Length: 448
Image 1: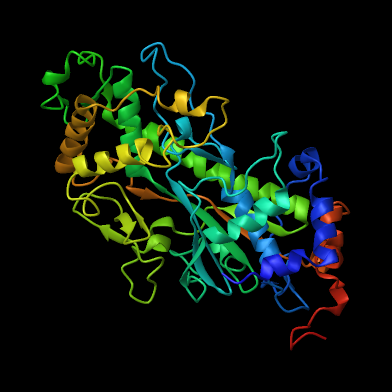
Image 2 (image 1 turned 90 degrees about the horizontal axis):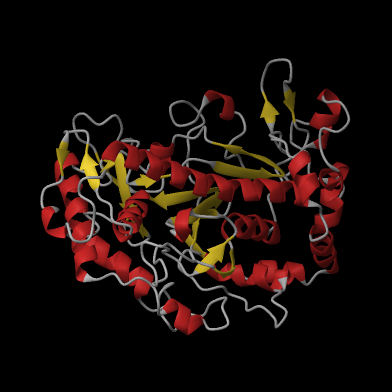
């Protein structure tokens, strides 16, 4: 990526804006949080709030984009892991999938999601999952926020040189979003989770604590588990459907929290925007069935009886932990064990960490021995063979919430709203971050 953000932050205007940003109160971001949907260049065509902006769209700068991205999915230091469970003591519970921590939490530190985004310059992935923290902390445990921010440029990878095409009509986009979502000048960011990997991590999690699944859809035990009776309680299994629902809930919490972090940053920066889920998730991934709307290009399967297609991965970019991206489920489990215990993983002794004796602590993690791998692989393969997908009853790849960021047209809010419709940061944004006033911006050709 070009170093435009690095160049801009060297400008006194940007440096001052960043200094003031770091002083913005969390309470004001929380209590001043609103969805502010009307952007420069926007047009609300009809109804009591009909209005057309007098100005052209005004895209985010490289630095503004980087701030939003780093807030949504940035690396902030080393994960503290899970410290204790009596069922695996004296070992350290080896649940987590990632050694570093990000700006948002993930169940047991699984972290299976990556961040995708699109704007006028193209479509990208922001690959912070499994990367080490890019900036070390000083002896006092602090980190230079500007240095951290700029270091995150390395995680931006272009997938396309055009904005992702999402037709502004149903079923691709909810009708109430068609007038303003993914428009020129906007930045659209959304996390996508590998639910298959999350499910495998959960199976490893419960197996460490002595539990297995039960197929309550077919009202039968999973065959082949009898040989593991010395390790797990076969008479107290988790029902499959409840387990799947919990997996999807955990993933939803993870990716929604990431987006909410970015939404709070909008308030501090003085950007407009909002969280939305009114873009069709499956079609955005690539399962529209319409060659004119390829989405991100994820491959997908569809079988009789399924309510929707099931995306499984984007080849070479973001592949779900299941066939066809792995030859079988055991291979997917083995790859996951390597993620956890291999170089850079949370349970590799040479991976740095937050403790004074990090190598010794990481080395004491509960080992993933052959019985554990075999137990999880047996259950996972049964589910894949029986249901034609993995996980069995929820999507393999999943997205939920999107975050749109844009520059507000304050004239719209001044016309229709009482005072207080936006924060002081919004009022001052253009001058503080760009050195321009609203009235100095380019006008639309049809503006008077």
